[in-house]
Length: 281
Image 1 (tube, rainbow, N blue to C red):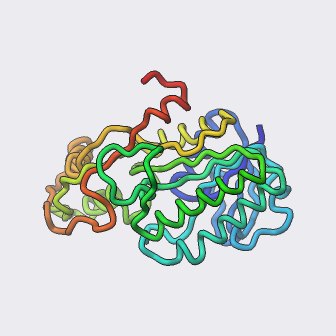
Image 2: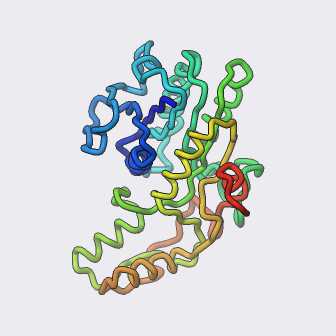
């Protein structure tokens, strides 16, 4: 099976390449012209391509892949930026639609739990999307556009809705890197919110395994939550990281307000993911 990956230099993409190598799969990696070629790309074919203005023969340049793991998306982590709607959405659709029209038969796209909006509790794939920020709206609109495209083009689509990830290579604005940075600076306390919000955290290495398994399954899965299915408070996660690493730092709860773009308690229902992966419930 010929595999292509976009967004391979990003947080999730780097781990996806590691997982592909673990399975002895060499991929074609589409990188922006300005992206740095990492040492981990050595076993893969690298092609330079501006996804916002791709060449007409983009599909052929990418090795005419059987499956594309599309992980690329700009403008993060500013979820409220209009860039997601005004720039990313139209560019992403043009790029993906062009590949499909050129012969791509299996497409895996990473979505976001923000597509569910301010809905609370366990979130299932059959629930109506109610995005409450530009990022979630742009992602959900792209999904709808691709689903509509299936009326005229024959291809398999898996929309992988990512929940909260953690692991090596994460953006410095994320929770764990911020905590780690405070420890490295020698801070005595780590300022955070009240920490009582419930979230769904999953290691990025597990996320990479799930994404590659879905890609190799060669099935039309539709929307699939990529999640743990186990709600945990942010406070508990931070306390666990501190205890696990024996870090000499205390948490200062209530320093920051709770985010206004997400509900206090939500997590993913992973029954469909388990079914797609062939895992016992």
